[in-house]
Image (cartoon, rainbow, N blue to C red; front, side, top):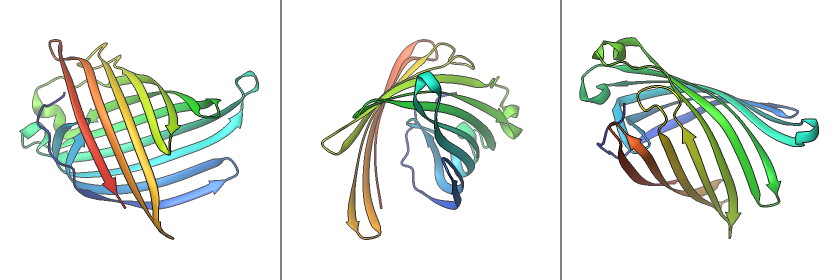
Length: 206
């Protein structure tokens, strides 16, 4: 389900736990935002989320050094799609990345989006969305640049391709404060009956 209404995202997230052991790192987080905004669309209000992520690196023989990660994300929001019904979502993701050169990296992964709880009472079929993706990243003049193609292989937007172009920059303001700026352009080849859609976003944070 994708909506066209776009609202500003304001919220607070908190990292609860982070541990590192050799080449494996784990983190647990929780957060709140006034609106659940994803890829330019607003999916509800009073958005609570929790996540756990595991990442690491290792040498895989002929593939060389590979960075990998796995994550579980849970979120809920009220007034889902303007219906007044609460929506619940669970995302499971896996990814692997490899440096192709000193300044170019390749990442492949897959995310499964599933929905449960009161959201199923909308009377609209909400099958899981399975989304493999592939992306390239580089850095130019201190600006991180990325492009990725996400292939929707399940759910209502079957065979839709979502393209995402990103740019980010970070600078140290003081000894313990960093300013981060990020921009994104997202584009769907198909939405619903076949119309295209593009959105733009910018974020700044300390």
